[in-house]
Length: 261
Image 1 (tube, one colour):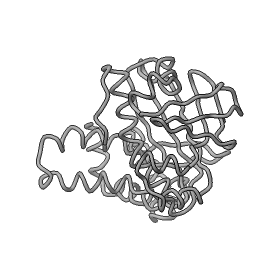
Image 2 (cartoon, rainbow, N blue to C red):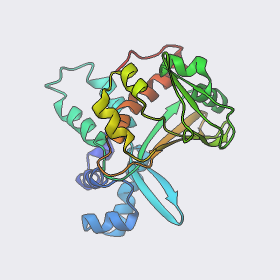
Image 3 (cartoon, one colour):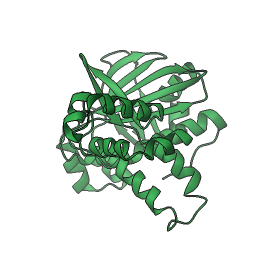
Image 4 (tube, rainbow, N blue to C red):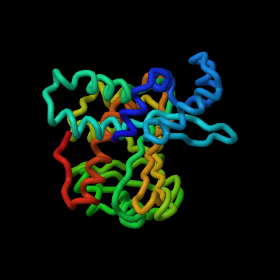
């Protein structure tokens, strides 16, 4: 947590976060152009932000893309906002909100560190006895690449030919297409027909889970991609993922789950 506060103390690093908040997934060169800062200075600032896990990266061919990561901000908020009244913590709350505002035509990337093993974490992502506890969803599939994937939320089953497994490499990588926005799903979740119709008009998105060893704990990177500009699905998912992944972490580390958001 000290690393987060140190990283945020520098105005240049805050400008970098502002730039990524305005347009996520930028290369080093793009960030330099946006901020009129020397390449060496931007590289040093990014190294500090990455060390504090406020920025995470991914590769696209030979390019290195930089993304905001809201997990450290959520950890700060969980610790401090519960201890102080909102008036005293308003600046921190505003920062949390800013870092989670959806950006145009970019992936949602979230990193969490979980005190468990890669095998246990992978099982928690696919086995219904786990997913029902922290998510309220069960996933049914043969779990081979290209296999159909059925979502079950309560009494509602969601099947569609385009719901498929994209990657299945236990215990390191899992990817699948997002569920179909059916009228039955809208009725069961209370989202309403207007939201369902707008969401159904968007291209189908994909979620990818990457699992890595990290000094005796597990690093989980969730990348939800394929959103159009001004996506309402991204807006909804980016608000839901932090709580969902915090609940997964709590379940694996303590055996309990968080209350619904």
